[in-house]
Length: 238
Image (cartoon, rainbow, N blue to C red; front, top):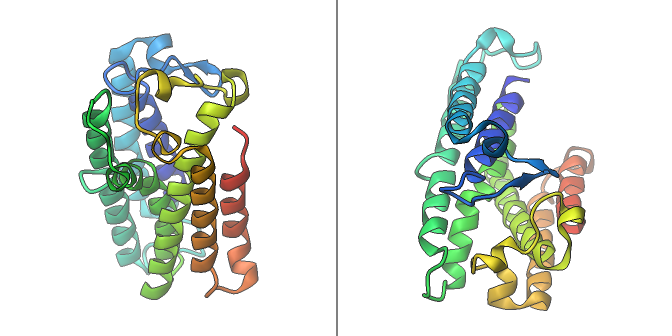
């Protein structure tokens, strides 16, 4: 559906831009050379710009929605969903997280846990939040259901980052499909660096429990795919 495709476009944009030398400076993504390595920095920047524009163009096309979500009958849902995506990836979301992340990288100042959580709630969790909340909006969920799913998404977003930080220091580049140990080499603040490996694993379990709790108000069949996603994020190996 258009909203899912739009979120994928934005996600791809964020990866292309995140890998740029002026950002995280990564040469490897999913086992392949990154976009700027293959095509050069200017094309990588423009690729991200094009994907961002295309995502909103795609979501705004009412004629591309399936019959079970009739955009002509529910235009307010579509407009609200578009606003949600814009908020989650802009100065209140992904961009804010990246700005603070860049400010902290290489800093001699010890990054407090609250600041690290701010970075990842905005940089990582925001797009997962958009994915979940947009689906709830378009599906006609109540405000209470939407907010429960928002908190679920924030929990799994932080969970994804904690697990990512753990894998970065426990797995090889071949196992991860990206450069392992890069955060350590660049002196980037991570959960294992602040909490230690064992406490980071305990925090991951708490976030998984929090995510499950947010799904307790939904029937089992409805919640099953989201529960599976949370478990996958918690126990993934790459």
